[in-house]
Length: 254
Image 1 (cartoon, one colour):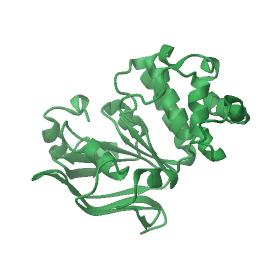
Image 2 (tube, rainbow, N blue to C red):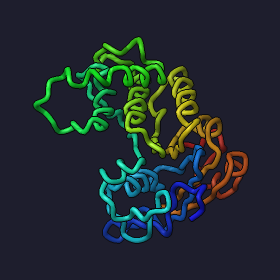
Image 3 (spheres, rainbow, N blue to C red):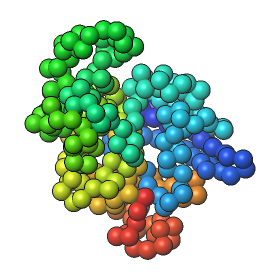
Image 4 (cartoon, rainbow, N blue to C red):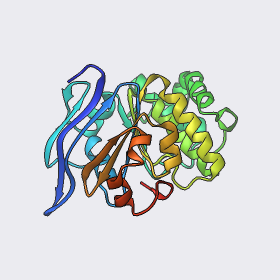
């Protein structure tokens, strides 16, 4: 495995009672790149993400991360190794403040994640680092806001901040702009570009303007298999990709 490849799958397959959701997928993600995974509904994108992050067991094939076979590792083990995922549905604590959400992500560094009897004041040492992360995602002014009160786009930014709190080498973003208006999409695109400056991003994304703007490499899945791969200019003109989406490139949705 080349040193510039941070993640590789070899023949990755997932079957559900005879239905093949992911079919012998070979994928390589280069360090420092933004790699997009797209495809029509039912293409196997979310299942593929669930295999990478161990939410589902692999039927066959291998997952290599930083040259190590992690196919049988547990989800927590994968996250500790530096591969961290965000989800389609915002996964933050709605009744904690924005600052408290990020602080929870940082708490692992103190080794007190399960010390439930410790007072909240024991976490104050993390405040400066938490505020720095909030500044990175343009949420400083929302630090004391209860998360349930945040606009949707800001919640997605907070989720990226909590992901960054785990200091990932590889961020897996599952439809980061889903359900957003134009202004929020632009903000999140800028944020992804910013956080990708010193790490690798693999993302599932339905908005092709976002994919075209951000991605170095695009892999297209259809019926669980890799249909095409390459830069946007190449993939968007591939007749097989257009046929899979049944429309023009402007109509493509992951």
